[in-house]
Image (cartoon, rainbow, N blue to C red):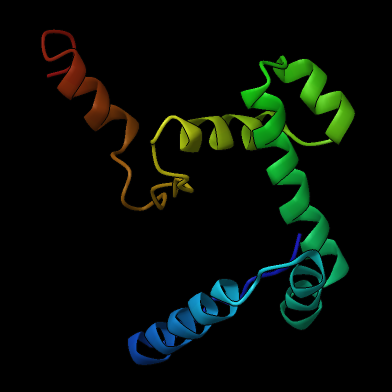
Length: 119
């Protein structure tokens, strides 16, 4: 899995890159053009990841079981689940963990959940 930079693109550059990507994707009309697109923007590993995820979608739509998909395509159950949620119209999101310092302290949480016992 590629290591992603921590710094995000600024909004203007992000919009310009999105427009460029839409234009590039819109120009794909053949297998050769798709291969050219992949070579231009993705490494072989990234290409394999994308194609594997599309294969997961195909397998889900064909009614295959998670276990069979995991074994055949060597992907995690989380990936299968996320793609299935996307097929169902729920967003493909990455849930972020709450930083430790923001999470309530255990005693505060117990007081909130069980006010009778923790005064």
